[in-house]
Image 1: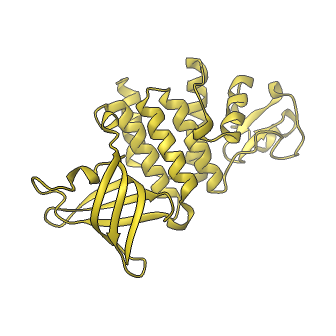
Image 2 (image 1 turned 90 degrees about the vertical axis):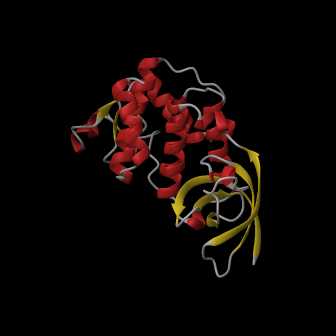
Length: 251
């Protein structure tokens, strides 16, 4: 059967001699794997279509829900500036790998196509990458069923003043002073960081404009979100390792 979809390339790998298999996050067909014959050969008309972050219209044959075979394609947005910037490419790769690893084929769709598209556009436009990725991570946690409880104590359920709260990645939310003993390693969280996490939880990337976040708060948010991702999802992502190296050497 012939399929025509709008999609974003979230994974690309060599296959055989001169071929490639790409994974698309599509507008209406979930995640789709497509074989692109001859894409790695010199002068291939499909070479640009297999690049990470490429947005386009893909026409492919597929029977019984298996791997498709590309027939034609047209790029609508190349995101070349992302691939040309090491720092931006690292964050964009992390977003793509995270979506690919966490969400099943049937869980992706129009919402995630729009979220990823907004994420890539924001990174390309030079918006604060840490904030953009933190919002994306929050959406991923929520979709996976691990969205943190930020409005009331995760143990007793009472709404307490923000100054009294800590946050527990292990228990999945904030802890009041009376319940801290349930997780002594719970992390301190400033009222400003908590307010931003609540904003991230309530909004999606298509509605998030420029958010002015001080460097100290960005570092706090990054530490907290990384703890949640590690504790709740426990993934070992190649792109995350590369981001860690960039931080280590301050590139």
